[in-house]
Image (cartoon, rainbow, N blue to C red; front, top):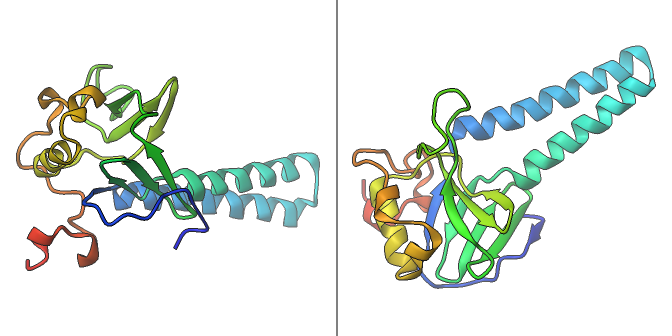
Length: 184
């Protein structure tokens, strides 16, 4: 259960997309290592300006990873819920200007490449929803759920992932699997 939640409770159908375990683990490990390094620096060298500055910076880095790194995104008819370790952040569709794809890498893809996860654009600010591309079946479920507003949000047929991609729930517990996959 998150500490902070702006997500209204609902029993309506939804589509849940998950971030990758490697992305989650690497972000948390990076925050923990940076924090351990800063604590060690303060313990060995004393509370100097640089050591305390790095300690504060590492605390901020770890807090951002816990409060803003999406573990999953729950798409509903009324909006999307970004699930992080410390909070559930609800974004209503009225605020979302467009849904776009993340760039996979700086050098490996062109700007117009469509290989990454979904990002919600709200005016000029971007909110990462998931860090990996969903399967074609999950994309179709998402378009079905959103109905006519899916094209307006940018979920057009041209942005559909290729067939054969693994679903984002593949390595999750059975509670996150859709009904159609629970018997497998």
